[in-house]
Image: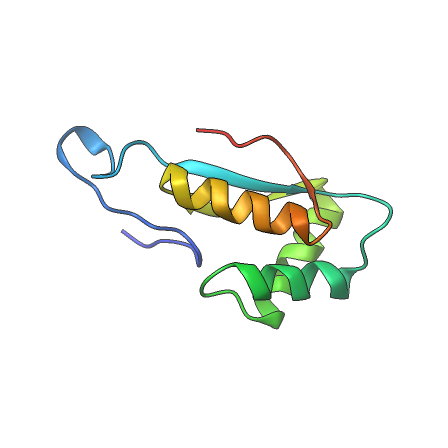
Length: 96
């Protein structure tokens, strides 16, 4: 089974991760962040995301209105959500 960059998959019995169900960090499109700023913020905060990957997410956010940028354990999701918000990105509430 393949995972997208920034996705943590640790499966146990019943299909759940060994750290509980995964949480999604979602960035929303807005009128005040540039593509470059979004890409830099994502590359700075998220493990495994470089500037090029950040630009790919920025394009997805622009075209779709939002993008799931990271999925995994709740505590890390909360941390990345907080750090991206502090970078000025517009964030959706965390989701399971």
